[in-house]
Image (cartoon, rainbow, N blue to C red; front, side, top):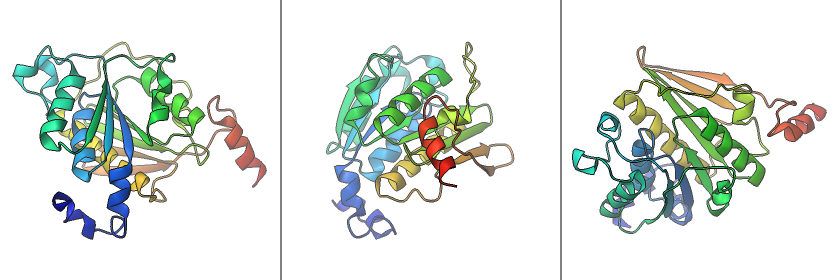
Length: 245
């Protein structure tokens, strides 16, 4: 398609890479601050099918960072407003919305997609997605923001550490974290970039790498996370790796 001519000149998208994106499906978990930046990134790249799951409605204090929405959308379901934006932006992309909270009972939703992007604001749902994806062999791109910082982490089932290795004793979050619009934009678009690389088979640069962005100093920091043999989610893989050393 003509709208993708410029990016088809890029390394990794030449020779069939763009066709892989057209044929790919991504589940976007969360249509809030991160999700409102992930979605344009995925759509602009030409992902063929995008699912959006969120049970929340738009509020006025969302609008400092959820750029797909306007004051006229306040009170509307985020999934519906996000899908409406997507239909206007790229009618050729197939969208599917799931207006419910993710739970253990419906987490098998991830099976219908090639990759999952976690753009949610609580560690409980992030860990739920991590477990669902690892158990089913679905790649996961996790992201989070807090104040002037943000993080990225790629989970490749059977190929490295999972989110439970990174946060083995994550505390339940009872309060909403401080959030600034540009941070959501930076991390959300970076998640979309990771998705493009993963779907075209180019993840060698970030497997097992925890990436933190300091929005005050404008610096990216990398930490390599190792699979934990005692991890309740991916521990069997970690044990196999240890036995092969």
